Length: 83
Image (tube, rainbow, N blue to C red; front, side, top):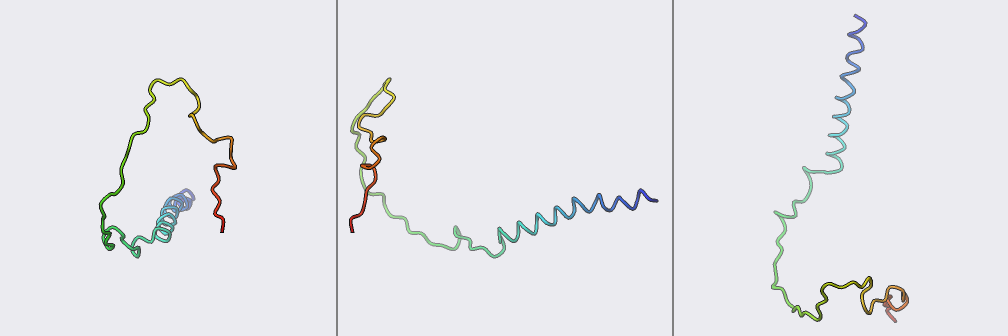
């Protein structure tokens, strides 16, 4: 009879972990109250504007750096707004 009294404790662990997981999931996901963006929002698509133009093509290069990069010139990479 003493073995049966500890069995409820073994079953309570997974059951309470499942209940806690489900409660936290419902609390943080808020799935029943969330706004369904895909269904309830109208997004009007506009045509794509602009153009692509190929400037240069380099194939089979052995160079480890890109010509004209400014990796080490960190002050010239930062664009400041004067105003």
